[in-house]
Structure formats: structure tokens, C-alpha cells
Length: 248
Ligand code: MN
Image (cartoon, rainbow, N blue to C red; front, side):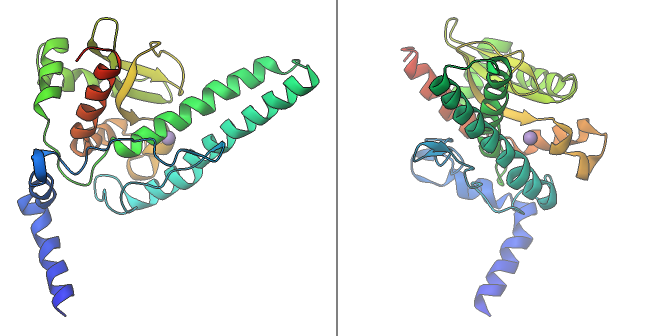
């Protein structure tokens, strides 16, 4: 009885008081609960790539991202990229064993397509948070340096993502040579990337990502994604990438 009342109160509070944000910002050190050390945990184990579990329940992003789409997206689409990646690697190993590279062009394409699909989807689940996340100061500063302002960065990310040609992704990335942020329009999973750049936050705009909920209205999905955006994750990944590049 007590439990169900408590739960009902929380549900009532959530949309009004931003319960998640309060919870997140009250953690020690002011770090949000949504920043994760390794977004790729569980994506590779025991010699093969794996479908990692979602960092939240399937219905946790409702109503901004619906449970039905999320279940199919994670359980079917992402899983297919994992299987495709493992299959490409097995076939490449077999080709080496026979020294037979007649299928090398197709296998190399499969490797890039499925490998990039696995990387981007794994990061995509963490790019969204059930809580309304505040933008950490470090990321806001980097956005201002790179794009003029946080608003400019968000405007460009939104515009780029909505305007991806056919199936693809919007991606906020860190480019280590100039120590700067870039926003990329990725086609499929692997095209129009910049070598060496680290993806910080990615938004999937393949039709499978939104069609059940929004049909052809990709813009409505991208607007919802921006409300789910896990800025603390992007900030944590930026910090890691800058450290790796010897920038701090
Ligand atoms: Mn997808």
C-alpha cells in the first residue's frame, strides 16, 4: 500500500517538478546520474560483439520516445547490426584461411556498415536520458568556443539532423587536431564521417527510428530527441576524448 502510494506520488510529480533532474543534480560532486564512464560496456565480450542492454526500461522515455519503437529498434534493428558485424568478421577470417579474397569488396562494406551501426546505436541509447538533463558547464563552454553559443550548436545540430539525406544520423563530435567540436550529417552509418573524431552525442534518423510514432514527420522526432538529449554524457565523453588527445 505504502509502496504503490509512493510510486503514484512520484508519477504525479515527475512531469511537474522535473523529478529526474532534481535526483540527478543531487548526486555527490554535482555529477548527473546520466553521465556514464563507458557507454560501450557490454557491446563486446568474450571475443564477439554483443547487443548491450539499454541503460533504462523500454518505457522510460515515454512519451517522447515510445516503448514499441524502442523495443523493435533495440531488439531487432540494433541486434541485426551486431550479427552482421560478427558475420563479416567470421567471413573475413575464413577468407584469410583460404587466401580467397573474391568477396573482399562486399565483406569490407559489410564490416564498415554493420560496425558503424553497432557503434552508433550503442552510443545512441546513452545519448538519451529519461531525465531532463542540464548542460554541464564544460560542454557549454566548448560549444560556445566552437559554434559561437550553445544555442547556435543546438540550432545547427537540429537543422543538420532533420536534413540528413535519406537514412542516417546527426552527430556531435570532438575533432582532436583543432581541439574543437563539429556537427556531422552521417549518411547510412558510415558515410560523411571525419577520421579520428570522437562521437559525443548521436541522433538516429533512419525511418525505423521514428516511423511508428511520427510517420514521415522526422522533425517532430528530432525535436523530441533534443528534449531527451543526455548532455552530461556528451560532456563526459568530451572530457575523456580531450584527455586522450593530450589536451588537458
Ligand atoms: Mn537505428
